[in-house]
Image (cartoon, rainbow, N blue to C red; front, side, top):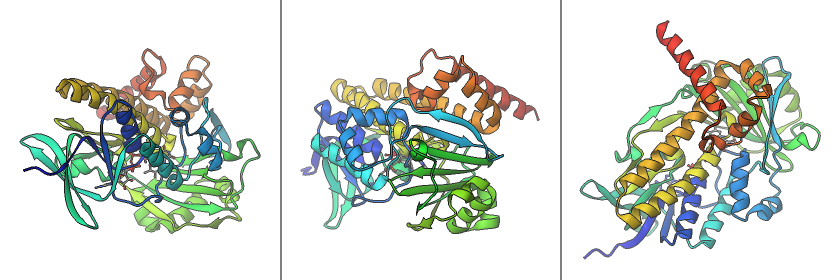
Length: 406
Ligand code: FAD
């Protein structure tokens, strides 16, 4: 006799994607178990939120909690180019924040608990199958291994890409932005701009794929990231500390100026191979959301908002599949919606890196400015009929065609 616990939905991972999927599934009356390997709060990178993410957070009813947590207000992004002068400012149209992910992810998890998502601390180690269909998962806790049955198993395991590693989803393929390594740490006493601009994101770049972020994540703490090509990292740095030092000396004098009196308050870390995509990422009894199937590049801070959006949109597909018994129609619709939005974001990021000066011009072009600002605010999934996405996409296609010819 099968004595496993039964849930409509089992979610692997309690990051932004998993929490939002859980909340939305509960709103649709589904039973949900979320299995998370780490005790919260835990460190996570991904600290600057788009306007779209801010709107989702406000819609969740978390506005007051975000203010109580003293997460800095993000009014925009200041992009400083190779000559160390301000090239352009990207305003944010909706209220949003910079976050310390340990507290932010815990807040989302608590919201999911309020909605009736059940939680289990444990490491998911395997999937249960009935023929080709995925019907549950095995997870390990201090007490041993357990099985749980699901109608839909959701992979929200982030860069672990669990279902890909288990051979359920497709293999991880590197994306355009894969040949970079990011090194990051938290600092106090960083020189900030004057209020109200003091809590904005600053992006500094020297040339293609040589860039840095400064994100104020609390009233006194700033996150610093240095992103450089892999070959440069291994040739000249080989540790997160050395990469940060390299960035201070080479990316922009402005970076050095701002960190002159700064003290590091967290160990530095490096991350490689963070840019990839996985196909297929939906199937009979399972689907992947957020970083578990795709991550592009951190430059425009899309990760958390895309994860949350996919969490919300996937719940619609899950509920329909459970109600109708047909997984293909709703899951393929989710897949196509995701691929379209991610492609628009990928084209925008590639355009920025290939034509940074033109990108600045497009920001000023009265015909496109509003759309570009909204795309940078995370609207890549909600821009049906806009002009800007096809302008960027055509420019990238032309660039790729010319590259093929040479
Ligand atoms: P995650 O947040 O990674 O959550 C996955 C969860 O699954 C984790 O809690 C993990 O412990 C759990 N898990 C994994 N495997 C298992 C298992 N087997 N069993 C149980 N639990 C498991 N995004 C932004 O929005 N703004 C930024 O400024 C930004 N900066 C970034 C900088 C860098 C260098 C990188 C690489 C990314 C950055 N991102 C940023 C992206 C952002 O970090 C991610 O896109 C976002 O966290 C994805 O959310 P998620 O819920 O899909 O996955």
